[in-house]
Amino acid sequence: MKADSKKALIYSTIYVGLGTIANLCNYGSDWCFGEWTVYLTMLTFPVSIIAFGIRFTTSEGYLIPLIIGQLITLVITWRIVLYVMRK
Image (cartoon, rainbow, N blue to C red):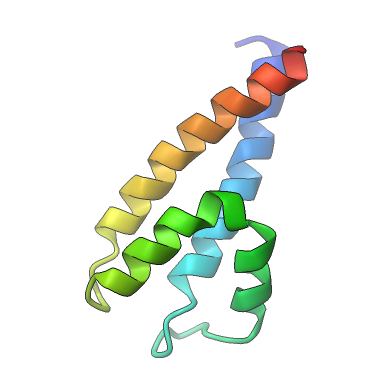
């Protein structure tokens, strides 16, 4: 991988990872539920909106679709960040 590609992957992973953590903790019965999840979800809104929808339309313990959706979002975000960095 080139240096730009690695940097883009690191930035994307951090950003999407924060959105994933916020969505994994924003359900009322989650062990780490708190007001901070609202702020983190708003900060990472562009990459969290699909996971937010998945989280509240599936049952409480069904997190596999959320993880798969965030992995797809990570790849898309990585490509966008890489494109922007090369411009």
